[in-house]
Image (tube, rainbow, N blue to C red; front, side):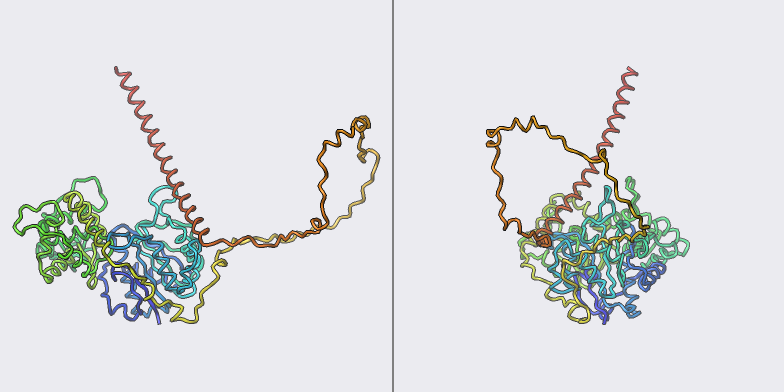
Length: 558
């Protein structure tokens, strides 16, 4: 029976469940124009020579939606004999969750799920190696989403993962893995991977027909030629298509002729400009409405929020005073910002959430919801610019909410490891034997013809005869020899002492290994900083030379 572990935004935290219950609990995402990519993933999964699949694409291109659609496809095909599926998304920390290292959190859950409590005691330096062996013990589909938060963006290590444990895990799985590891990020992952078992694929924009089909699905009313032209004008990005279709469907009943209401942006940032145009148009329609406050609040949260958590954040019992209902205009503070949404009943609050979902500004799964990446970043910047005081107060309220939460219990106790359900798999150990040794090459013996060397002939010229200076020996007096130190007396016990050269060096402790990996991380950080300083120095030198030329030109003109 296939077991699946999920920790991503679509499922609001970690879930340890059976694969048969996966589709029953969560709906299949609607996807357009990704048949080729689904085929590539299926081919990589059934191909025994494919061990690492690197998928990358820009924000909003539909990487996560593609993976979830593929998982539903695999479930209908009985998972292609997969023993286990492990899906993990790396979230940035927010103010409603305990602050912890995302890589440390991943290894803690993965080691426990694949190897049980024994595996969680593995030293930090060996966690990547040990987890790779545990994953390779099963026919595993391992999916790691959101690696762009862990990649270097500049320097000689650009696009590489900063944590050495994760690097070791991916390198070992790329070299030997009976299953498949899928890595998802914005940039193509760089690393010391063998070319044989690694496949890379860049997720491109939708085709014109697929983008037009997406607009039709969202309720835009126009002929096929006009829909195709709209898709081309707005870049054929899946997120942009959803935003455009939601805007026309909700505010203008799907009338494409109302596209003239969407403003034109004159900024110099070309990346995501079409999506930002629609966000500005939606912001104009939502201005002063209760839904706007929820978008501002959720823009500060990077992880999915449960409905109960939102109710607790907005609870009047927390002592966050509300302004009078007829107060005009609203002041720049948290209470004025959130007052409109607080006055709504629970039913109308949920209707507001559903409207934001139809607009494409909010994702909803069960009772959990969150903002897409572009929407969150845009509203976060606008929140800080339009409501600077409320922005600070909201951050303070979120920190107060987190401080008032009860201590987090160990959630690992509720997760049943694979070693319990699948008895045939054994945990590899001990940890000290997990380091992959460097292959040593043994030189083959060379056949040399045997030659007989004649004994040397000693002559008077070839024999060295020492010359003794008798005059110098006669100059040595008893007083001179008395000044010399006495000879050391060596006992027979010291002569017969046997030195044991076979004794093993003292074993490394876990604290020593932790210090080593910390020093390695600091060294890598210092190298990147030095590289950045070198680049800035060259840039400043170039500016100084240019300034000297301008000064000399001014002097000549004068």
